[in-house]
Image (cartoon, rainbow, N blue to C red; front, side, top):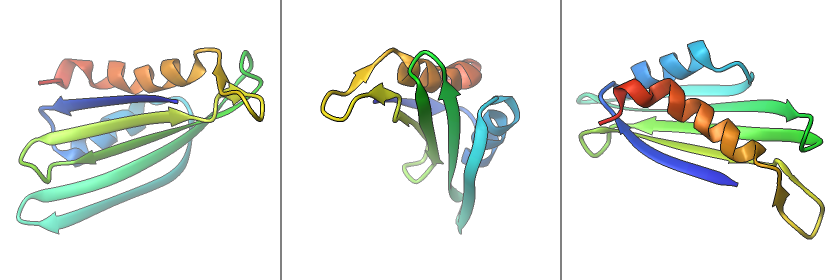
Length: 108
């Protein structure tokens, strides 16, 4: 599992749209909520097959501005092999970093 937290100078909707337009993995789920008073939150869930890991990895991107600044949480998981050991060939980290790179120019 790999987790990245970042703050960006975009609205949650803009951040999620930017990720959605540039992420090459398969989109599994998308939701967005306008909570009023300028507050927003949304989630994107992606899935991608990693040959080197021999399985699929999941990527969850959550963006909200409930604290006054847009916070983005990126979680990649499921790329490990084995039932008892969570051995990861680096696929989860690469998957999470793909979103970090998409939003890098907007990071505050």
